[in-house]
Length: 167
View 1 (cartoon, rainbow, N blue to C red):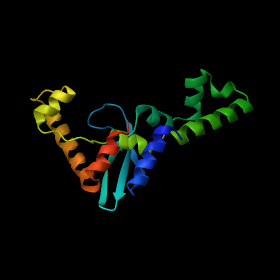
View 2: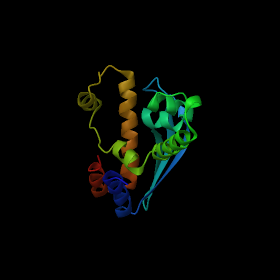
View 3: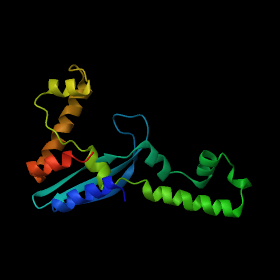
């Protein structure tokens, strides 16, 4: 476990909170033309719960769906048909280890959720470089506001401040 994951788990413990992460599917998010693994996460505290989708990284998505044949070609530039039994076993173990690590952690989610409120759409656009004429920027602004409101509902301001330290 990395220090980052430990920090996220400690934050949840300190806040008397739990997080559940469930795989949903592989899909195309609105903002990308590449497939991503999509997860449903729920954070529960004594004040309630908040649930949302989390789209995993392209790397984790690729690894989680990678076959041994693909792994051999990509990482060893070898055709699986022409390898020894020992190599196949080692590569199978390596790929299994990569697949176990290719799932989002509490840290991944807490580092990505919206932890700040924006006073106006124009402030939001200025902060992230969006055009104020963009419909998709407006949709993003509203989605960020909903996420922040959901988290604010279940965490105190002091807890939100601690969550902002998770990066």
